[in-house]
Image (cartoon, rainbow, N blue to C red):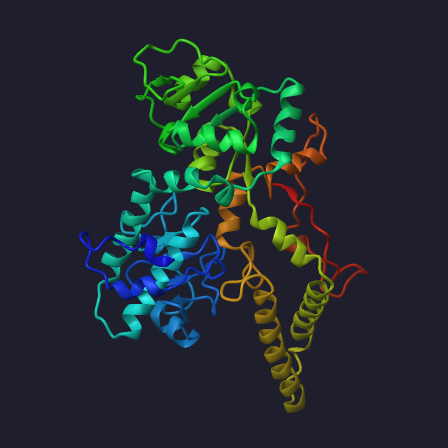
Length: 430
């Protein structure tokens, strides 16, 4: 139920009718931007252009004409975009939702907006955004989410033998492994026991909980603390990070000093592009891998016959429009208008293959999404699951593909393979 995370009545007097909204896990996708002041949710491409048809106020799409009038076009200026970590701060009016937890947050925002709009209730969108943000934060900080999952771990956590298999494979080949998480020790222990096994700590050389990423990667002032089996914090000064022991907080600089590991020889995996990967890539030179679960379902769609045929014809149609636009006679112009209409309909169709409201996580109509732009910037490699590594030898090198520049691309009609789509793999190197 959406109501489970609605701000409590004693904190913010929200109508109890909001609790009647059911949570729809298929409404939103990650990577969307939310205009805090205008209360609209949208998908933006790598060049700050809004994908028309993906702007929602509440649960209803905003007409293209209204969007263009609202933003004086479809481009969002840099000063209005989210900051480095995707947040709305320092004058930025946009918030980018990047992690898995963002999906219910976006849906909750949209449901409350929908209720206010349908009931003609005057409200301040900024207050609503902050109240929802604080409620989601409290679910984490106050341990509500952790307790709920621990109480019914089989319901919320997927058991996968391949997770243990990939960790064991790396350990058997002498790879040093470490775990850095923001979750508390009791939650980590119960979760890892369920996913990996009772001996999960034997697979890791270092385990760090409540790390407070991304601060862990930047703040030199926080020392490590040892956590006992009963969860008691010790005050001993840490001179060595011992295998099988759990540590709390700490910082990256002390971590590197105590382990002697260096970024260029580390491959660090995370599922949050900003909190996990950004600082490690830009400031510390680590090699990074992103876990993007949505990749698996998107690849399945992209390899269907329907998608391949649709994209082949869409590319062909675009090429025809480009080639034939020189013909100015009335009959040719009529045909061109029909092609433009068909192209628009087909682009809408390809969007609905992935998500009815927002389309693919990785693409707008023809450009990469802003999400993919950040992913490509901060991750050397990305995959649907850590278990994808089982398909490769431990000494395998992922070589980056040569990406064609615009002036290197062949014309749409040149060559026998101009319109062919490659079958993508679940691991893609930058």
